Image (tube, rainbow, N blue to C red; front, side, top):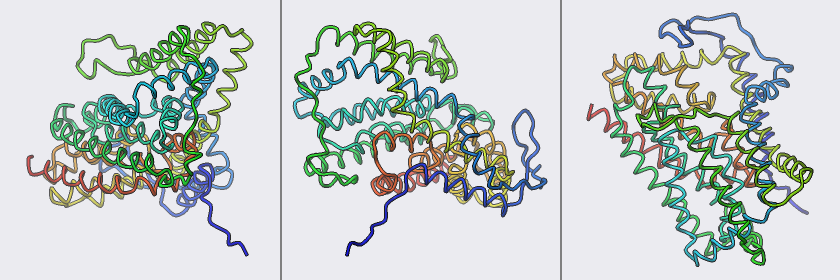
Length: 462
């Protein structure tokens, strides 16, 4: 008699279950609100408000409300899918990857530290996170072709950028916003954060390289449980890397470089470079135009380009849905009036704590807050104006409150199912969420303990 084995629910089911749990919480947690000045909550002004518990209808609408709220990100994902669909049809990526693997000649492992450092620099300087979604469909096949599994491809991007975000140095979307609300400059505490980034990025690279080496040697060690025959994808070496395909790969690479340049706020980083100020609408247009140009260079007909682009969009439609559903959790919390109440509980928990106790409590409180409010800029806007003044009473500088906030926010967003990037990346790599947790939990624990050490050192130095 066969015994039934438990199967981890899909990402969609996990997110819908979280939506239901949040809806139940709106019936149990008192509704409340802070007074706001220019969109910023004022410490000590929390008061209860008329409860607005979320019912069955609200649960059913939450995912759609989240989709509307995240429509810019979702459209961006679809445009990337269309762009990649056109590029893949040219055969340029297959030919380029095959050529690269042959040139590396069993030195593919060095792709891991090089790419992780690049993503880490993006994460620590300008908060490269949502933008990484464009790289998963590109790099996962590369690492599969090199003899690794999808987890390695995901880790290079997600853990590389994630380690950078945990230890953000001048990230304007997390550190910059938080520092502004804490009343400190972006430069205060930067030395500690630079040291944190070096340690964390090094730990992440070591962790991924150790796992990759194990999988390469014995594919059965993969956490996704595939065998040697399935772990590799055969790149077609008969596809010649022609001049036309080389030109397409140059344009392909240039598109991603333009994307990165377009979103970096050089003015806020003190660099004398022109600022484009692009975000998802502009990035979506970039990938649309680049896809059309590459299609014509490849000699594809107009109708062929359109059909291929739409088919590529369809390939990433599931990822767009996941992002929208995950955003629905925050929408439900806000509609139920419990976001400020949860924040108020944190305010009460910190009252009267000493410097070390305070900064560690701030860090620990931010861990569950980030699960409920995955947006780093949104969480900074809501919480730092309350946490930073409390820190002054405890003898803790605003720069340490900022470090505690961003470290917790970055850490949780590597593993939480409410983070759209995590769930989207896993969907692209066909990696079940429970396998990702099984793989990454040790690194999460290392980061957790190391952050607490850095915060204690920060208190001593302060």
